[in-house]
Image (cartoon, rainbow, N blue to C red; front, side, top):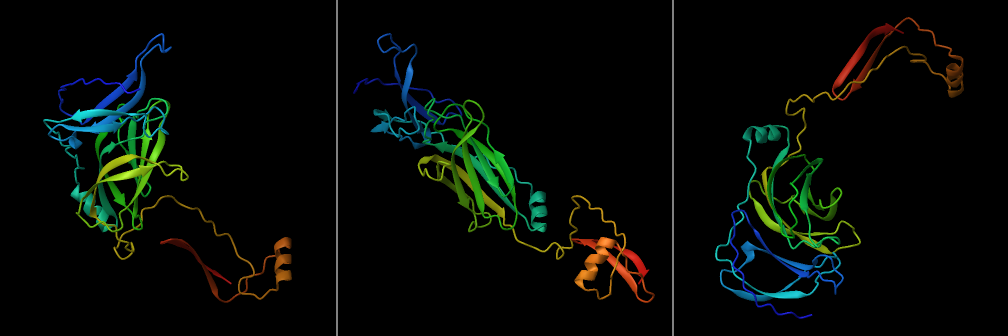
Length: 303
């Protein structure tokens, strides 16, 4: 199975195109008992990675099964006369929100999910309908689903609040093909040592979510910019009042045995028999209920 085509093509690059794909099919025929063309493998190359002069090389085909690292190879001569650069779309910065976050000890992290490349194709189609999910602390955002491609371009800007103690950005790559979205790769990025306003633009390899399977499933390009870092600050030191998230009802009914010395047996008997200790004249008793900074108290009662 070593075919020779020697077929040249000149393809126009439309605005927004970022990837060139070469697909090898087995032609439908009665002899091969195929009712339609069957995909044998795919080669995907980012246009930004193509040379400006013709360059010959063997490119491995990604097979239908994700376990197939290569289903053969094709020899290509590639040349891009106009190499389109991916213009990274960055989040629109709201300085009021950044300052508000900083006043509460929260950081602000800007993330741009630019693209992914060299994805391992799914078992069913040999390609992916990929999307990317980014999680910072408890907050999670995701890109739109891209059409079938092993080198999708997302260019999705995001902005996150960063709580003190959050040091990792969790990135998951999902396949939206078929029913639902299935995660097929993940990577965690440590942002502890990131400097403020020092953007990091890089490719990160991601592996299969199964911890026993450490295969690299592809790469994802992210631009990360820590606009302001999270700093733990005591809310009381900032003169801030915590926002109420609910309420608790406390009913203070009565007391017994307060200020008296009773052995455990007598105390147990008093509970069973509901024998209340009589109030004695003298000191006043004050009762207070408190949750966090909120507190209330009952008017003093004679003992």
